[in-house]
Amino acid sequence: IQKDNTAKPLASVTKLMTALVSMRYCQDTVNFEDKEIKKADAVEMMLVESSNEIAEALANICPNRQDFIDNMNRTAKDLGLSMTFVNPSGLDENNETESSAFGSPLDVAILINRLYLDYPTILESTSFSIFNGIKNTNNYASNWPFLLGSKTGYTDIAHGNLAILFEPIPNKRISIVVLGSTKEDRFTDVQKLMNWYLKRL
Image 1 (cartoon, rainbow, N blue to C red):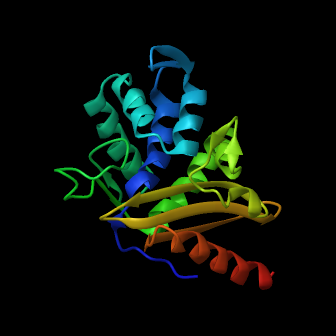
Image 2 (cartoon, one colour):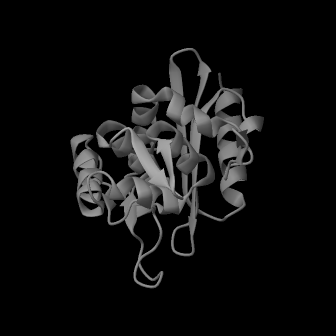
């Protein structure tokens, strides 16, 4: 409805960038809980269940955590985004007193679309309420028509965040991004915006 360039705390919406950087630059397997997992499978698990542990595991092999975070910020700049990151998960820093990532709703809209264009099956894993037996943090996902993918985020600082990408008309992708809502209202906020758009088709 409106282009918003105000940077806000992202919380786990950060993992959209973690996914993009992992897929672009990391090796093909990751060790998680003493198991070798295919990178793509690990990234899908991270996005669906919003796993902070998998985000860290990916960062640590690519080739190390700090280089990975530098790559997140470099990739944001290359995409023309105002996003900034200090960890791969989106968890708040300094005893949960400072946000670890910032970006505008417009930034997030561009990022989720970029992830879909480059790695559609990765993002599509988040379009189901349950994917490969894993419960999605977006339990509304399977109820939303035309959904291509989504990502939740929540911390005490960021409050409730949610980004979705859907395609109501072939080749007409629409992003809806809600930042700074509440843990529950982020879902109804997105639902209202989706309904508003669909009624105007």
